[in-house]
Amino acid sequence: MRIGPIEIADSEFTLRFARSGGPGGQNVNKVNSRVQLSWNVAASAALPPEVKQRLLQQQAARINAAGELQLDCDETRSQHKNRELCFARLRELLLQAVKAPRKRVATKPTKASKLRRKRQRAVRKARIANRRVSWDE
Picture 1 (tube, rainbow, N blue to C red):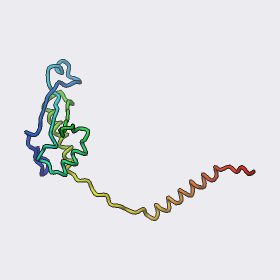
Picture 2: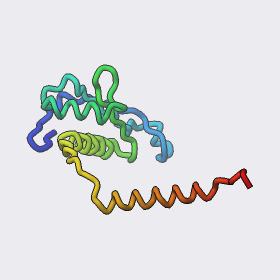
Picture 3: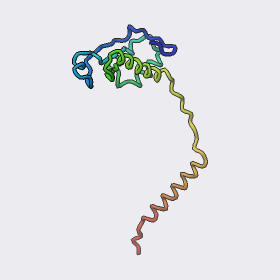
Picture 4: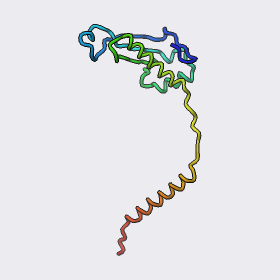
């Protein structure tokens, strides 16, 4: 599998096939169309360290204690199509991890926003002042 400058050997992936639920009639009970893809992200030498770290953070729910990313696909009745869908999902996850997050540029509030805030505070203050009841009368 190749994603930009990153190339991952097919031997790093483990594919398991299982019987899928859903539509298919009697065929569901005979054919192993569900695809379960496992890839040990922690042990992979194909990923640069910063990409590996981002992937481990972004996909923490899909990565087990051993560092394996696990994807399942049983959307179609075809094992071949489910396999392609699994690899397409993995490609999308890797593309997200490869893209470095942009640095946030600190900005100051504008004069207009400061003025708006002061006016809103004054309106709120006046509304609260009108609620007060004088007990002297």
